Amino acid sequence: MEGFYHVDQLKAEFDRLLPFPIAAFNNLKKAERVEWIYNSNAIEGNTLSLIETKVILEEGLAIGGKRLKEHFEVINHSEAISYIEDQVTRTELLDERTLKITHHLILKNIEDENAGIYRSINVRISGSQHEQPHFFQVDNEMKNLFAWYENQKEHLHPVELAALFHFNFVYIHPFTDGNGRTARLLMNLILMSHGFPPAIVKAGNEQRLHYYETLELASLRNDVQPFVGLIAGCVQESLTNYLKAVR
Picture (cartoon, rainbow, N blue to C red):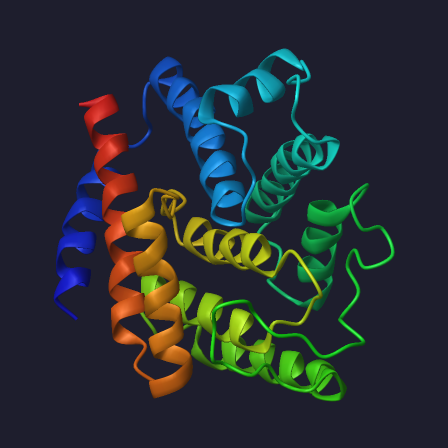
């Protein structure tokens, strides 16, 4: 796929410049976390702005007129990012335990009864024609997904591996809520374990619409390349941002 050529060029330059100056790297990581949390939550309907997200994370302040749930979505997402970063540092495997801990962190204090627990009901995604597997099938479908990951992780390009894991995860939709945020976290765990910075899917109307359209296309027509291409573009943008900061 053509997009991987540009990704690989940027990644080679990224690797060549390692280790980055500590001050520049820490500043970029701090800004990146705010952007990641803001965009991932906004895709799912959180109404906090980028600045409000930053204030909650860095100042520990509450935003007047905003729901408590939205504050927890910011705090929880930050904890989940710290957890997957720790997993990468420890070179821990992406497995069912990692998944359920990540999801538990996303939903704690919001839906504790469902945090880290596969759904026991059938669900439909608003605006989508895709029918998720029956809840009786979820456990087996997830075991198959992790088996697929183990079989493919040494063969696929890391960007393709991460994107396809994301798509297959949301196709199964194993939890009652928090699937999108969890999918993007695990996608980035895969990317980061291969030395890439996290890919941030932007919540702006154009990219958000394209994100959902390409997922729908993959679900209904088994055409995954537009979605893989979208994620490759997000990876390129992240690499470019790092290179601009340290050159």
